Length: 359
Image (cartoon, rainbow, N blue to C red; front, side):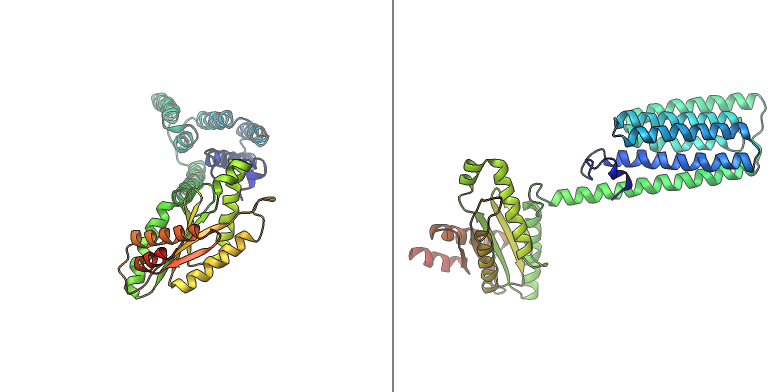
């Protein structure tokens, strides 16, 4: 967990402010480190006390902003304070150096920060204004005949800026990767239960079915429906109903194997895809799930039961993903017609039709 989360525990990785706040804290810490180090160097190495006063004043200002942000203040205001302070620091340094020793290259650190914190429109305006000012300042310095001499200061400016850019773009790349990974997770996850969503289950069922047929292996699916779920919603409310679904999702994750895929099929229905599993093994799992759910209260004193339809795509059949799901749905229908709170397995459509005629 990032260190700044102790100040803002309410901001998690799903919060749109997450990366913005992280960048604000990173910039503040980098500036605190730079002001302190460069201030000491200006006193000890360069004998430039007047610049050191500016450095330590900047340190005090940044420390104040850090305190402001850590108190949970407005992050939009904090972002502008950081940007404004950075602009002031850059321009003050360029003026103090009179444009010498490549001091102007420090302004190139502004665009990625401005764009990240304030978006493309405001970032473009801020960057454009500052760059225009720097262009005018450089033009004035050239007209005055001030040379851009090379010295130890020029070398240090290059090293310091290169280091700052390295950390900045390293942060940017890490944030980009985290955002991409979060998007990937969101795209395959049901937001309520945290299980796989229907789209991801569809894709994986087709892939696994093709792989199983190619390897000559069986595959089974369990279509699970919560019995009388509408009654739970009507009696306890929809929020409590959501908690019941989450509790069942947890039990399902605990019951299946690592190689199985479990997800929310829709509403109060769940689907478990079991590779390399025949109907007998799938029924063992289904009965274990039925027993586990009925034997304990799911939320507070609320009990529930489930009906499960089991279907097998054996290696000697040409069942498609749609076909095996259709068979599981028929098996589920039979489980409900026989009183619910049970699992039924049908190995083929013919066996289902024969069994149905005997009800």
